Image (cartoon, rainbow, N blue to C red; front, top):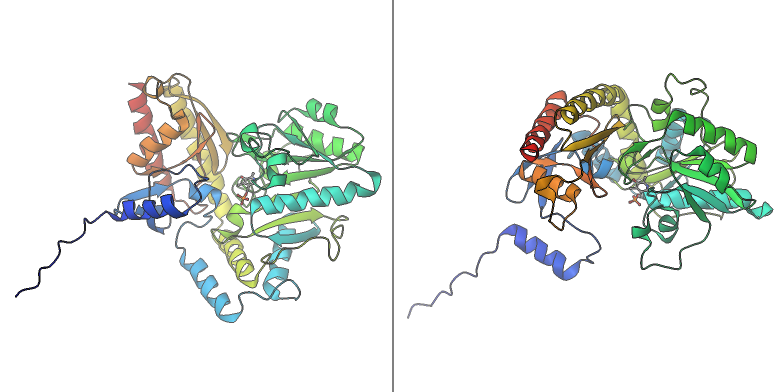
Length: 427
Ligand SMILES: *Cc1c(COP(=O)(O)O)cnc(C)c1O
């Protein structure tokens, strides 16, 4: 008798299967888009169905050299063959070399390595507390609409209520005042104040660059009041502005701009191009404030992470990618402003610098009203349909944070897709 072969199980598609794993086994702390990716190459991504997307989101400003960059792969493989991890109880070359590289790009000082942006900022909070400890000063003045990460310290520092809700009591020691408002900072300073913390360009808050007079004014104020001026460059740093640090670009051609220097800078995102690594730089004479035993992390500055970050620096410098960001970023911005002028009923504002561009959608776009999803999410969804990845920012802004090696034709392709969607919304 012939064996009866059971019918094949209903074949679910790969996307459903993967999403089911998430639904069953992954903590649902993220609102995810209905996209499941399989591979990437340069500034393109492919989902599991084989659909191609132009990625102008860069994994939220992380993929500095795009996806599957062969030079990063080679650095990873080479270093992992030699030495992946030894712990911070010992010395090794890549960490020392990467620290030197970062210092050379900013100013004399020292670097601490960690694994993420929130953790880099935690280092800044501890640095500030150590700095003011003997005088009983501990309070940090930060900005409303800022974003500094999701740790308990990070949500305390962040100037947005939505990240704090449900996690009270919030860690004390932060005051929030409007961004780009020097007088508000001055008024918020108390005898307990020890530092001011701002983003060079507010990222999650909708892409708002610091004004030159704000930066210079903060420097003067911090000098007068003996406060540390700390910049969160997790999103806006690492050449994304067209210079290593955003303040360098924002202060170009401004009187006194060349002399500007913060006391500490946090970094992560593009630093590792997808390999998780964070860091903070602290200016002399504060480089030794955090002495032996005061701060640490197991994975901070591993040979592997540092080798990758060193390779990224090398490629950015060799290929003059900061200039690429500057020229293409200026061009993108100019084209988007034209689009805004053509369709003011859809785009109300375009802000940013280099490869940090925020496009603000107008209020009351007919196609977006009456639906429960924020206009930013609806726009990003439409662009996904059209094969373009961007990142929402708040309710009405979508962001472009592409790889630093984006080409002109890729930028033009992205622009054409945005133009087509904007045109449809204006109809
Ligand atoms: C992303 C981000 C952080 C948090 O970095 P994580 O790596 O997610 O912890 C902090 N600050 C800014 C400005 C950011 O954009």
